[in-house]
Image 1 (cartoon, helix red, strand yellow):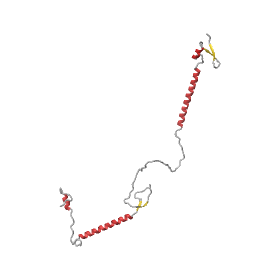
Image 2: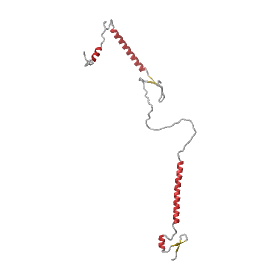
Image 3: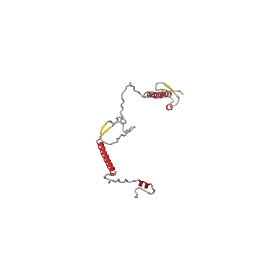
Image 4: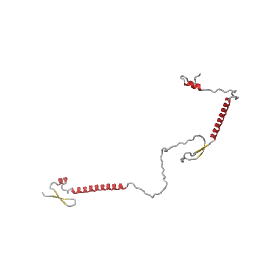
Length: 191
């Protein structure tokens, strides 16, 4: 049998195996080998893998470069102002309640809120007119009590008018105390 030849797509001749041309075409035997086609596919795959690896390595290298950035400036002395806006309740570390020993109307305040104060420092001045009136009332009561005491002493002296020349007997509580020490005795029982 003679060798079958056919014209290729590029115009070159390829030797076809002997047999039925339809069966040979169906089986793909007369064509050029698929090695060249597989080589192109493998080269394309290698190129894609190399590109993916390259992109991955480039991103990994540049991601580390975008770490923390610092801004520097020359040193200068100035006040630091920071504004904080928040809701909540502030509580002091040390709280001191200040109170007065006496009550009265405040006439003058010598300190302001958050002013530092020292022990013994005058903070406020009170109106003393009410205190002065209470002092005078107490002094009058004291003088009245002293006059009553003097009058009572004068009545107890022999020869004074109030007692008729006789001293009034002083009440004795000694008997009550002696009775209270006895068993069964109680306060407020009649003799």
